[in-house]
Length: 254
Ligand code: ADP
Ligand code: MG
Image (cartoon, rainbow, N blue to C red):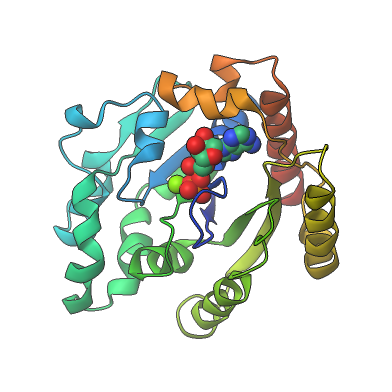
């Protein structure tokens, strides 16, 4: 049975893409078959996995808008065990174009149906908004993983995200669960990081992963080399932490 996990937070820069790429690669490292769906028009996951966007002929946009089959858009990546549904900038138009489409919230769910069972995990890297692309992801998902950056406004906006999750649970996807809450860019030298961690733990309790992702310069360098951290700097703290996170994610689902 495959598990579809949406990686969502409408804030930009909290580590959604970094987590999609590196959790994906780490799940594959543990022997899992992984599909990563890039549903952010920025396409950062696509390039971060070593795919040249200029070479991408069709992307998730064509699946959502032109009803192209997932199979014809699916790419294998340089990482063994990781496949990708890429995104290109034309996806930016989908938010508006989908408005006129019947049962638009179910587009991703329906198109994933035919391929999801080839994988143990399908990770969906959401855009930084709560628009129709994120709603499609939450509708298609079994669970949502929420990365939270350890910084001053960390909890601001989380109410809105959780409200969206509740609305989706009520009207579109009853089975949607919170997969887990991931603290990212943790800086052990600051009190602030510790304060955010305490607050998030108080609020989400056992939903917070034991693994906390530190601020790690290797993690921020890896995308420009088109590689996950495991290939770019396998011995770094960042790599170790994502490997640990993958273990937790696998364990929690058993
Ligand atoms: P999002 O997808 O939520 O917008 P990203 O994953 O793209 O966030 O991260 C935002 C920026 O922060 C990127 O430049 C990324 O390389 C960097 N970054 C993410 N996680 C870390 C980390 N743990 N340590 C250092 N830099 C990070
Ligand atoms: Mg992103």
